[in-house]
Image 1 (cartoon, rainbow, N blue to C red):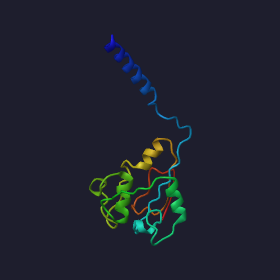
Image 2 (cartoon, rainbow, N blue to C red):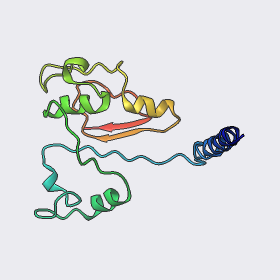
Image 3 (cartoon, rainbow, N blue to C red):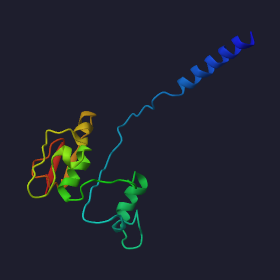
Length: 143
């Protein structure tokens, strides 16, 4: 009888635990602002290091959102690093190796395309440097 009671109590505990594991309901999609800069180190943004630069607007965004504190890219060149970041693939896989001879294959899966598929509007404003027209963006204006 005691063994049977333990099973019943264990089952009730498991059921009550499972009901607390439901996904939270998000009524409004979260806004995502992804800022990618190049040609400087983390010391050039005061949200990472306050010794050299004061960037209060970027600091505010960083404090209210997410900062990548342990992020690396396998190719530090401008265009190739962008290709790595938006595809999640190394240069040998996304085929964008350098800034002078490559053209980005925009048929590849990218995180902006995944965001669009999830119902987000996406925009790219600024430097693209991939020698192709952007895809996966609702709006774009590139340099």
